Length: 598
Image 1 (cartoon, rainbow, N blue to C red):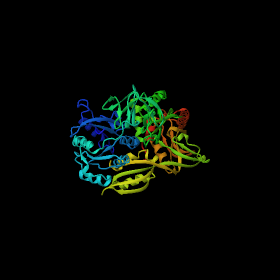
Image 2: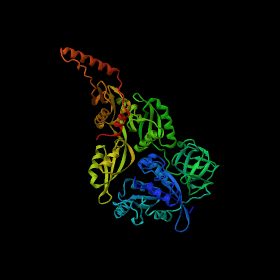
Image 3: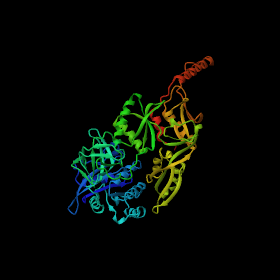
Image 4: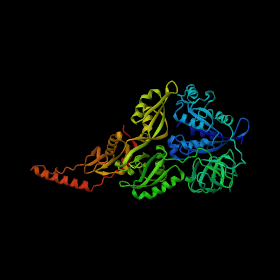
């Protein structure tokens, strides 16, 4: 056990976690140069394209240190995005140390701080590494000041490296061996293991990622999950290298995998404790909680005959993504579909892209919404996430919506622009402080519904990419909500309905009407697009019709001939409007969904 080191790499988005992982894997010889590819731990195309980690990965690296001993370094690569914070905490709970990566040009950012606090809560040893020192804009001295002032760590202990160029990789490996503590635990006591992730294998069932804290686990053992008391018989245990390497047993201190014929990923819950059925441990590991969806949206197939394919695609995706929640839903405009719950907007985008790519589906998403609480006249509390379930306003006594505490770190020259953006989104400035002479942290409390549209994109553009954003849910607060409907030719399109704040309803309705006007194709008759609250119209725009010149053949004679033809055309258009159906293209739904008011 003295020769095992369990560690995680934590950093802000795009500070080089995956690149450093690549260099460590190459330096320890786990993969040959011929088989190597960039972002080797990222298995999904979407991860490679966006340069983000969505799924936690782990790998065991054998390393011969300067003292001649061979050490087993268990690297647990974590997602960097705020949507997956809970998975990061469980991965950190499986480690004794963390490598904190800081970009030599960008410096300490919001998630650098947030992830460091998560590591400190788990009482981990932290090694700061200043990465990307080869960049022309790198300023190592400034970063060292930030490490001391913002993070409270020793700047002289920071290792200088460039993962891209392979500089300082040996120093990082030696630092992990010398500065991180070995795991503790008694192999002879009752089994106590923490699940920090899992994925689905179509041939073997669920592969469970484990950290063994006490005891041993071997094939043939009957294990029990402490959250739901489910029991399984272990078929195989082993270590992760680039592929699974079976072992005779896993004992205290080790990180590895377990296969036990588990049918779905949702049976294994991240953060759960595994023990033996016949010899259970005294208590479960702390920190376990159910993953709760935050953002809700309905998914419909573009062609109604693809409904069965969508159902099958979601079922398969659910096998790999336990945090995805869905139930059947239907819409007058779009037919049958599913109401889905997501951890956040990135999670929603990832699910959408995976359904389109991996299962070859054409889908429409409705505008994302959050869970609102309604207090009814009889004092019953009702939680809704779907605008179509919004009750009669006369029966509602009060409405509440979720708020978040947002931490935004920006250079101070952008303070005014960020303040304006947050106040426009009904934010309340709680605090701001200077981290260094020209960088500041601003704390806002914002309604979650104002953040889920395009807040992050706007923040990035007004701060020219320097703004960083991290948030946590805090509480529900009283507010004034209304249901805004979109009518096309007098017919409500339920898939476009939104629950919005009363003060923003007119603005939202105008934006939705204008966006739809650009996307819906012109017809032979006039199309009215209206935004309404109940029976009151609050916004309107009209798509003008194509017009055939029926009077072209009248080159002379009495005016009544022309009038007769125009009257005939008018009646025809009226009849056409009564029987005509307006086809709303998929892009129209996306235009309302994607962009908020400019």
